[in-house]
Image 1 (cartoon, rainbow, N blue to C red):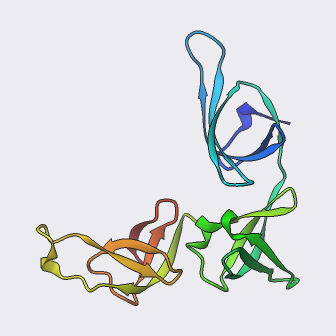
Image 2 (image 1 turned 135 degrees about the horizontal axis):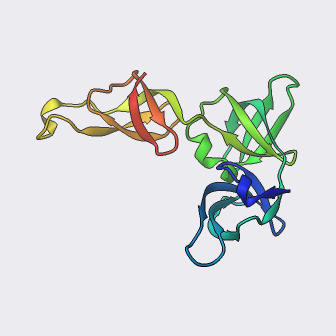
Length: 186
């Protein structure tokens, strides 16, 4: 069993027969009354986020998780298809389950697939990725009063992000996958 004292961001727990991922947690010790833990959980089945409060010391069944290296093949609109690089076994995950992660992945790219209780459930992407710019309007220095500014640019994975005016088609840029913001040129 895992206690509320052992919770960490990214830990998977089972609450009332449903598997959740801990997004955020906070131990609270009020001046009067018992301590409690305020959490933000993401339901693995459908990705819904909810806030839940537990008594300090409450116990949960830990969920066994592991990551396996897979190659992302393609997404066909309803499912995302992956292949194990060693056994060449292919598997499909409902695309709605991994939509956020697929924005940052190119076809044929190696990724870490998260297995929860021996079932594939999520794609783990790094906190920042480097992608090439495939489409961007030319930036003109006189377009802004201060000389700075930004413009939309489409990256090779198909996602559109705001980049500075000096970024052109063909440049490689580093993007934060958590916020979707431009970090730097690569």
